[in-house]
Image (cartoon, rainbow, N blue to C red; front, side, top):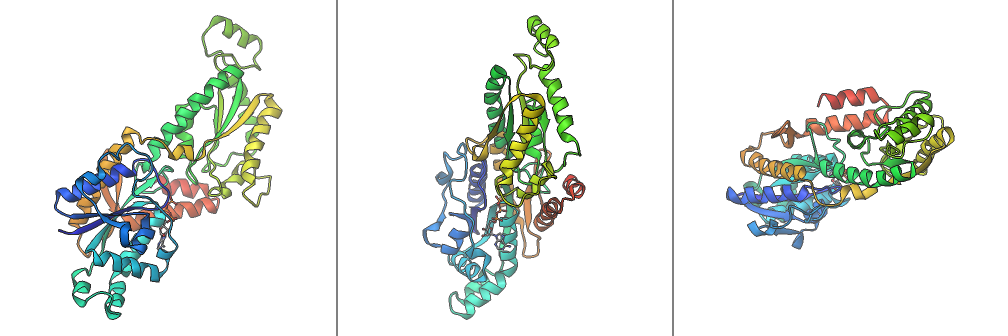
Length: 400
Ligand code: ATP
């Protein structure tokens, strides 16, 4: 049967294991030889024990685990031709001419370059006696298919990326936990969530947790946003929402104070450490900031606006990698299953002339879409965000 290798690359996300499992089992079901490549492109370059044949039972008991059991990495060697040459040799030696890559746009771009370069890599390996002329001919074409694993949901071409839903669950759990303190102490909490250029997690988490305010990287707050935000927070804190007559009365009498039952206020700042540096000035255009420390400045600024104007006791909570941890949600497990199975079917049907595809979610269906077109659009969005062209970024993403 054909040799198919699967690997995870770039940042990990919940649900990757479900995709690995489904791909391996679909591959074995249709009679292919299936391989894991450990540690992403690094394992492909290093070869040896990093490339192992997978059996049906190799993927038992992994669907409920977070992260990726076959390991992920970022790999400098693969960016150089010399590294890709080693990788090609390792694949040819095992008769692997099909790759399933789960990663971000960088990993997918790398796979596509590798595919385009494949015949020239094989020619070099053959001319230097590292592979036989027979093998050069037998393994003349490399097919690839991609899946996007990312909690950010920032990839153009799919409704959801693998891991986003689980991350959302982690955020909501944290919001619920924090709201207990918020209610008890009438405190305002500023939550920072991940998302890099993409405000999806922040926006949806804000909706699902009754946040009073949300700051998104795609939508620079207009001049005077501080006043608008404070007005909104004041209203939210004094609204007699709990319905208990004594509380309602208290709230009506002292409108500046939150009702005991409704004191939870959240502001979300979707900023990511180091990755999202350029988004920071969105929030405080008047503060020229040049290094990572401004992240802290932004949050403290938002906090000080609340404290200075409203006198609320205010705390900043940074969720960080907690969002990428924990068990994958049911949605991400099913998403991984659907995409992993479809990825293998795409490889089986691929011909040397087919354009490489990425498996995407369209409504409720796992479908194939052109890989490079989606990668290019995703990169165009990132560029538009860097250029502060928010409107273009949102338009491009909206049409995906
Ligand atoms: P994340 O969004 O989680 O960071 P990503 O897949 O975009 O995921 P990158 O660090 O951009 O992460 O890429 C992962 C790896 O893919 C790189 O370390 C490198 O080995 C390989 N890669 C990326 N771009 C290329 C490229 N243009 N050519 C060859 N290899 C590449």
